[in-house]
Image 1 (cartoon, rainbow, N blue to C red):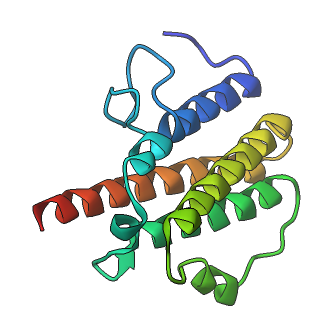
Image 2: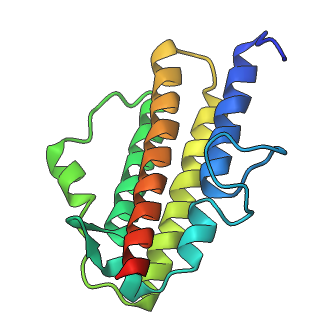
Length: 162
């Protein structure tokens, strides 16, 4: 096992887990996703059409999960960069709202997710060890996206049975 000798090693691991959640495992093993190349957000969501993404399962849709994760990643990237202002309950509630979703809107939502992922990745990488609270924010963000990836996969499994 490799010993953690610097905060940069922690950041590298955080980015590796974040990458696994969105792209695919970067190592010969996985921390939490399936080992297939398309097991992260991007591969999983690309297989769905707008009608499936918009269907409600247990009070939310896959599209709403994606919109919320996008919002949360942008908010956390700002926090890591030093914006300590909380986004507020109203913005959080709006992050779950998806209007009528057509194919173009679904593609746009996926592109916005990719932009938020890139934003969070840059924030973690460039503000890697400046404050313990920011490192905590990065850990929370990775945990949050992993949770919602699991929720999305559960919704997909339920929709396949329906």
